[in-house]
Length: 117
Image (cartoon, rainbow, N blue to C red):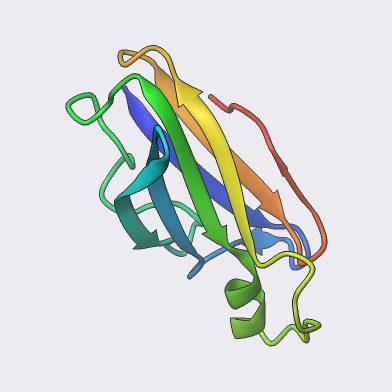
């Protein structure tokens, strides 16, 4: 089924259009970048899931969201260093036939996530 994400900007009450996201596969002692992208106007990925059935592998993964760059681009004045710069979310894929949706609700000072549907 695949892996997807959706980011909502809770400071401005809108999708986080333009936020950069990186997907990494976590390996023993290192990580491998699988995909880097910028979210569309709906705060989602273009072109379908981040991983689809053919690319899904059992293992540990990390989504890295470029939060500070996104809010700076929206004109938000952030301290240096920002409270949140990049937000890494580590998760596991145990069922390659399943659907994994990893949403992020974010502001410059907080974030929340969950396994969505």
